[in-house]
Image (tube, rainbow, N blue to C red; front, side, top):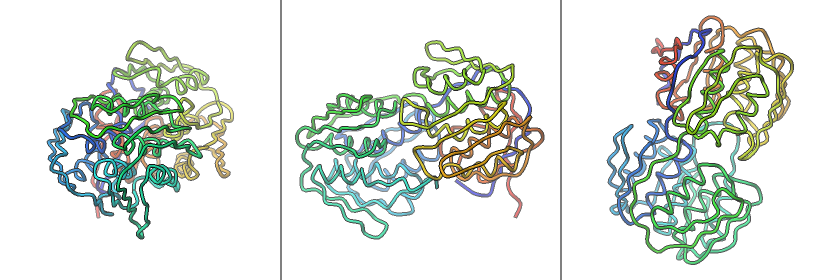
Length: 423
């Protein structure tokens, strides 16, 4: 990731053609740490070639694991040589999901010392529920000034009730509980598709995880887990972003290799706006010809509308006829991209966790800055539909979660490129 580039988009061209979705970012950043729980080598396929995956590969190597990574082909991890339990600030600050190493290392060796995670600046994202879960499993937790030290002589299965639905907390406790002694029940668990995929991966290693995809997950701990070969599911958020981009440019795009049932909340909103969406087994076709209608969006845990697609759809809503309201219920600081959309001609008022968008005839190109991963995706959508040229600064945020997104958009007809920023 480097901050010396900008992305240039000349908008106004309808996206047309076919595109294939990459493997899921949110699954990948959970499955890669989970390989540490195995007692044998694991092979993971369909990983996206993104910065968050590269960061985790580097961290596994720093812990002593033998890693063979061929981007776009496979990741082979032999965790047996891994003796390390320390993940410092430089490594942990590269991605938010570095906190999954706490659960994985606790389960593997009863000790983890991991710096507070980095990633996008979209709110506090407290990990108190993660730590509560570890403590209930028998771990001792210490905050060592920017480092979290978790230690356990023996993790023991128990009943854990989350105070709020937490995707990260659910995943982290699942990782630790797989190697705990006895039976763990997680109540008020998150139900996202990548939690189901992680459970399937763990079960393919010999774990016993039941109930993923419901709000009660039951885990019987295992003293050993074996190697496996596993392909992660397609990226739900990339699918949604491409759907929104097709609608924003009045395009006609077939998105292949996706799971339409994961996209129902997004499909419902696009249909409500007047977009034509047609689903088949593993493809979604999005066509947009007529005017867009304003709609109201409220982010919710799965199967509700995903917070990760709130920002991209907000760009689309800037040109919808009428007034749209967006209520962000997951993160308290996820409207920072709205100022950038206003620079492009949008009419938006923000009050706390509510954004009110009055549709305009169209956006115009402007210099804008990505403030986080999904904000970058919103600016991509805005740039694709704006008149003139849009310059997106700090596009490295986009690289954290979207694999070769410019190549995919260019193949659909977009005028998009990168340039070095002159000093």
